[in-house]
Image (cartoon, rainbow, N blue to C red; front, side):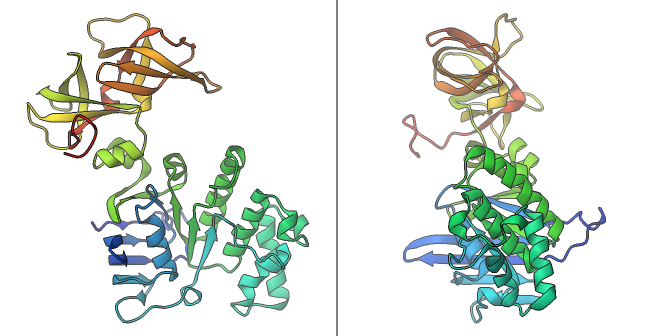
Length: 382
C-alpha cells in the first residue's frame, strides 16, 4: 500500500523545514517473526503523521528503523534527497537530522535541565551565546525556564517529558519522532501535554511521526493516521476518514466499537444493507465492502450510534437488552447492555439506568458498519 501525504502548510503560509520522508518496501525480521512486511509510506514536509496500532503491530519497529536505531532487512528509507537506509548503507541516528522523544524521558541524570537541552546543540557544534539563547527559548516554549538549574530527579514526570520535548526541538531537526510520550502520565497531564506537543511540533515546521496505541490521542493529534496490523500498513488517511470509513473489521474495532452482532444480509438499498441478527431483529448498516444478499456478516456498532429510547415507533431501528453494568462519566452514564446475539459496551444516557433494567436501544445506521464475517461462532478465525 503506497499513499502520499500532501502538505497544506505552504498554502496556509507556514514555513516548513521538515524532511520529505519516503519509505519503500520496508521489511524487518526478528528471527522467524516479521516486524515489518513491505511497508510503503510517503510523508510530505511538515506533516504530522500518527502510527496507530496494538502492541506487536510494527509501529515502533517502523519508527526505530526510520530513526536508524534498527537496520532494515529490506527496502529503502529516504529523508529529503538522501538515502539513509537500503541493502548497502545504514546511516546512524546522529547523521539523519532527527530527534526522538521517548516514553521514559531518557534524560541524563547527571545534567541539569539546561545541560540536557544544550546537549543536543553541542552535538551539532552550536555553542556560546547562540546556544544559550536557543536553550532559553526552548525552555520558555515548554514553560520550564525557571527550572533550568534543577536535575531530573527534582522534576515530576510531566516536567521531565517537557524537558525531553525542549531537547528535541532545540536543534531544529527536520524530523521529530515521538514514541508513546504520554503513556506514563496521568490523564489530566496527558491532555495538557498533548496540546503542547501538537503546538510546538507544528510551530517547528518539522515533519512529525508519532507512535500511539490510543485512537483518541491519534485522532486529536494527527493530520493523517497510519494504522498498522501485523507489520502491514492497513489504512492511511485523515482521522475523519479512518473513523468514518474503516478499511476492514480490524480498523473498525481498533478505532472504537460499542459491540458487534453477527447476522445475514437480507436486503440492500443505495447506501445501507439490512442485516437479520440472532433474535430476528433487522439492523441497518453501511456496507464495509461488497456484500451480497445471504452473506454472513458482523455489524460493528460505534459508541456514538447508540441511544436509549423511552418511546419507540415502527420506524425506529432498535434492540432490546438488559443493563449489566453502569459507569458514571461526569456528563452522564455509560451502560453495558446485554442483547440477544451481542453486548453493547458503552450506551450513553444522561439518566442512570439500574442493573437489571430492560432498555430499548436505538441504533443510527450511519454508525453501524457491516463486514464479511471471518470469525466462527466462537469468535475464532474460520
